Length: 132
Image (cartoon, rainbow, N blue to C red; front, side, top):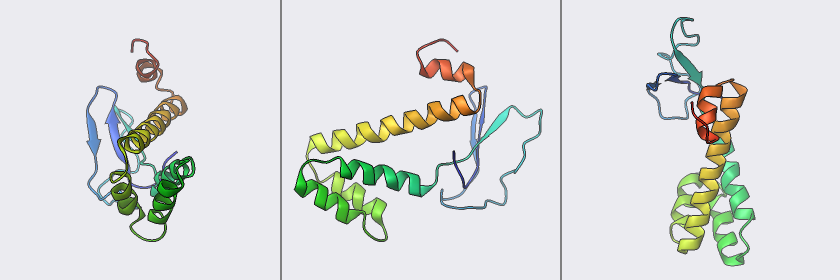
């Protein structure tokens, strides 16, 4: 699911992150392989192009031509993430709410997919309304 800088999370609830700005492809102090007795699990972050596609998909679903043009222009070129965020938060509360809902839904879907792919059934049941 993800490529890039590794993060670690413990099944006991402790989360450990290795330093970096989130865009590094290599981090020297992050272990490639954890000790088999170490309860932490490796979680790779999602690459920026995936988040970019979320923004583009959201913009494409906008029915208001003016808002669509503003968001589409914001995504063109360097600093697209910053421009998109600035543009979103200049729009109406309904556009801001729709963006936040869309972004949060996609994040949750990715979490549940990762849990399923990595056979974390105890954790997955919490997301699906069951007990861990």
